[in-house]
Amino acid sequence: MGLVKRITRSRAVQEALGFLVAGYLKLVQRTNRFVMEPADAYDRIDMPVIAAMWHGQHFMIHFAKRPQDRAASLVSRSGDGEFNAIALRHLGVRAIRGSGARGRDIRKKGGAQALRAMLRALGEGEMVVMTADIPKISRVCGLGIVTLAQMSGRPIVPVAVVTSRRIDFNSWDRASIGLPFGRGAIVLGDPVSVPRDADEHALERLRQNVERELDRVHERAYALVGSRDPGAKASPMLVEGSRA
Image (cartoon, rainbow, N blue to C red; front, top):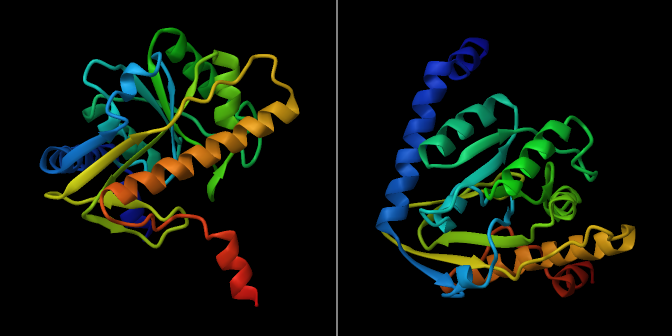
């Protein structure tokens, strides 16, 4: 296993993997019939924005980007993140390497450099894409993305991109990746703005707003392709009923 790991972490192999992943995603984008909701989504938002996504739904998020939009995406510094960064490069998205801290402000646990890079990107008119989840805790929004919005003055726009034909993985984040020759939906949520003077209670309220809006756009996107979100939170009524 050590030899296999060394081979897959080599630069040449990662370049090849990144190129192949990007090529596959381009095929998925070209061969699915996508609908965008709302149809005038980009007329309603003032670029650049912070595009928020749930972890596991990140493979196809770049489908929502218009050709004229410059974009950068936060990618972890792990070995797996390296080939993700390479794939993004082939898809026209610049990678910003860094990671946040579980349940904490993105400025902590080594995320300060990435935070500065994202602030620069937004200040120069570049859209920033990042997962909203607390690391390794699926579908729970952390304060990192809210902190970035507060410091940059740019709004958070929740985004969901799904396809009718796809592979759903049994991973912690319930990841999905589209398959060719189907239907697709791109849903953009209502922008969430974070005032610079927001206090702790306001930040928590806005964090919850982002979480709810991300859940809503994913539910709607899956409904548009006649499916159900495999990573959706259990209904409180269903959970209560299961205890009876």
